[in-house]
Every structure is written in C-alpha cells, then in structure tokens.
Image (tube, rainbow, N blue to C red; front, side):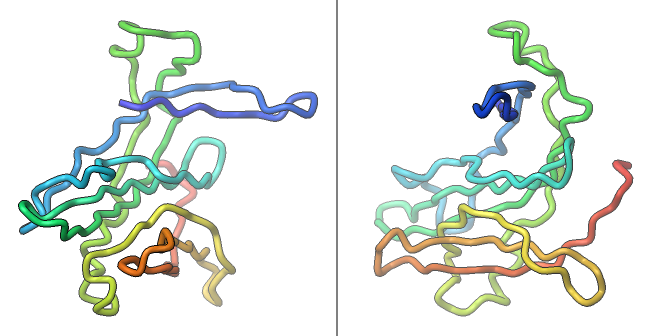
Length: 171
C-alpha cells in the first residue's frame, strides 16, 4: 500500500493535513508480456481531484516480453473516494495495517482502447499525466490523459481526450 497525503496552503506554505492508505493494484499481466521491465512495476503516476473527496487516479506499469527487451505498458484509470477511509496522518505501523483504505473503482483499462488507437500505440505508452479539458457541447467534462516520449525514438507523446460523465451522488 501507498500513502496519499493532502497538502493545504497555510501562511504561504504547503502543509500536510489528511493522509490515507492507497492500495496499488497488482502489476497486470498481458499475453506475451509476463515480465516486468526493470523500470516499470505498477505505480500511481497521477491524481486529479474531482472534489474534496473524489479523485481520478492513473496507474501504469511497464511490462516486458520474457527473454527480450521488447516492452509494452499498462495504464488504468480509477475513481478514488477518500470519504470512508481512515485518516492515518498520525498513525504508523500496526495502525496503518488495520486502517480502512480509500475506495477505488476501475473506470478504464487502456487495453480496452488499444484496437481504436493508431498502430504506433499498440503497446500503449508512457501515460503519466491527467488534466481537465474544455467541456463538451452536451455539458460533460473532458479528461486529457497524456504520455511523453522520454526523448526516446521508441516512445510517443500522446494526448488521449475522453468525455466523462460525473455523478453527483457517491452511490
């Protein structure tokens, strides 16, 4: 598990306030890419707040074809809700192990989109940033999911633009 820390501005400086346990998803496996890249286990790469209790989380992992240097990525978006989680700001050790973690719901596994992407994105890419874009004519927000090429010829800078429908209820 990881720890999420909320930072709030106070007297011109950022101070930690609430903290929660965030359970990282296991590193996924994809057919033919069962190995883990030396720099790519599962990780939380970005958070984007919807409100004071809900966030969109981007997790990604680097996978490698066994016996080769051929790699592909995995990327997933989750809805995270801290409202039922234990604030562990003052907790360590045993208290954290028994704490209630944040709620987490899978919104999108990018593998479901691979068939719609250009061939250059078949192995997905280095997705690591989230931002809201302009609203759509029907009122939905847009979400930009971005990757960068790390100055490597084998990677791409990509912007995936998604329409999202938010529910006001937390049911």
